[in-house]
Every structure is written in C-alpha cells, then in structure tokens.
Length: 262
Ligand SMILES: C[S@@+](CC[C@H](N)C(=O)[O-])C[C@H]1O[C@@H](n2cnc3c(N)ncnc32)[C@H](O)[C@@H]1O
Image (spheres, rainbow, N blue to C red):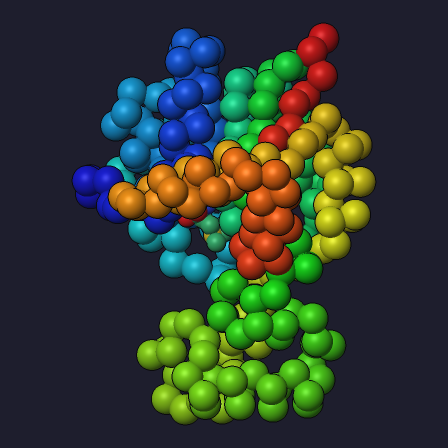
C-alpha cells in the first residue's frame, strides 16, 4: 500500500470542503465520484473521514493500476460497471467529483445514478469546465475544443501552437505533428464539453444547484502565502463578480447541489 501522494490544489480544496462538511455532519459518508488514482480517498481516510471512491477507469488513463497501489481497490474504491455504482440507494451524505463531468458521455444518466446513491437532503460538489473556457485543459491548447472535430484547421492550429511551445505532456510524442494528432484524438475520445445552459438544465432535473466559485477563488489565493492583499482587493465593489467571470473562462465551474429532503 502506498502512502498518500501530494494532491493538486483543486483536490486540496475538495478535501477541505469534505472536512468542514464532516464537522457539521459528524460521521458523514462521503464518496469521490470519478476518484481516478484514489489520492483524495487516501487523504480523506487519513484525515479520519468515512470516504470511498468509485470510477469507471476509462481507457484514457492509468488510474486503475495507480488505485490498486493504494491498497483500497475493492475495499474503499470500487469500479463502476455499465454505468452503475455498486452501492445501495441513499448511502452517501456528500458526493464530490473533481474534473470528471467533462469526461462523461451521458451527463443525465450520471447525475441520475449520483441522485440514487445520495441521501435525501445530501450534497454534491462538482468542479469541471464548461465549453466556454478559453484553454482546453487536458492538452493545454487554447480554443482547440471550440473547433470542429477532425477539421484540418484545428489540426494545423494545434500543431502550430505546439511548435511554438504550448501544450502539456510534451514528452509523449517524438514530433510536434504526432503530438497534435495524438492529443486531438485523446480529447475527441475522452472529453465532452457542454454549454453552461445544458449543464444547468441537466443538474436542475435532479438537484437544486448554485455556483460557488467565490469559495474556490479565496481558497486558491490563500493556498500560497502573501496573497491576503488580493483577497482584500476582492472585497471592493464589483471585484468579486469580475474575478468569477474571469475564473469561469480560465478554469472551471464549481457547482454545489442539494438533493431534495424527503
Ligand atoms: C481527469 S480524471 C480526474 C480524477 C480525479 N477526480 C482527480 O481529480 O485526480 C477523470 C476521471 O473520471 C473518470 N470517469 C470518466 N468517465 C466517468 C464516468 N462516466 N463515471 C465515473 N468516472 C468517470 C475517469 O476514469 C478518470 O479517472
């Protein structure tokens, strides 16, 4: 069993949220939906939370092998089969999902399944980008997800920007051309970008939801020392709405949802 690996700032935010949730709901059962390698589950359990994880372990990542190394696969981390989670209805008080919903093909079916295993009155915290973000986060090429799939324009544009030094995971292809081909193929197979309107109309079928980017922006700023002055600046009139608008274009949505109480 491996010890908990360092987490990125979004997962640290989610862990912080889960800890505070547990303080107001002692003994809460928490699920990390789309847990990937299981780092958050490991860290949550190390912090004394009753946290479990589930994932389809899609072919686009090596998360299943990494999750197995945590020693939690089969006990606290369960693989989903045919879109269904291996849990009874109304089991969890809180379900978190970080950078998952932009990968699911059928958002309605996923939210229906989350609704099934969430207790009445339970909470869902979702972090993921809508189509209107400027930068495609998985390959790091701005606007590549706005262009028509398979188009020559998109391919030459991506190749050109990669040749100028943009893009992530650069070591994974021998040439810039091959990198562009591989990465565009990856985003075509494993991402589904939706408009905010589509996202909210789907969430609204199952939950009452609000956007809570403000909490994330503050957390992110205070995650590094010496940024208190920026947080103070955001208290000035008009600054927080501006920060939220910029954040949504550069990062992702942070959605807090509640299932109706019985
Ligand atoms: C970018 S990773 C994020 C993993 C983890 N939440 C994190 O923050 O490190 C996306 C994860 O979503 C999972 N995934 C994709 N489609 C899914 C679905 N329909 N249901 C559950 N998980 C899914 C993938 O297998 C992958 O582990």
